[in-house]
Length: 123
Image 1: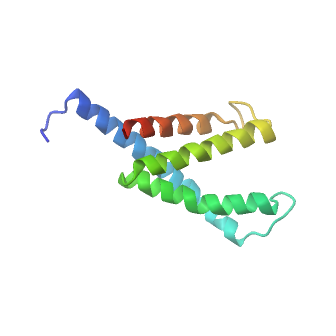
Image 2: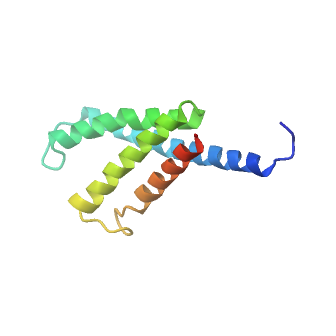
């Protein structure tokens, strides 16, 4: 690889930066959910939701590591895309959240878009 980056090299670098950034977000957010393993179901966190959060505490960090390392980035990005579709659905349909504001789904949307970009760059 030469010291000078060609435009196609810049695109590769840009997607690597995007992949690593999304990976870091999912690694951190997934690790934060590890505390859910000590929780018991409650009114605020029914058993079904708690089980989903426990599953996400495993899937999110794994997807994050795959993206950070660039190992199976298609799998990691696909997991992120699916998670973001689910998160957006819950925020809009179940919790009535708006696009922006407290608990808005703008971050979910951009992470979904980033995961789609990573998927498309994998081909």
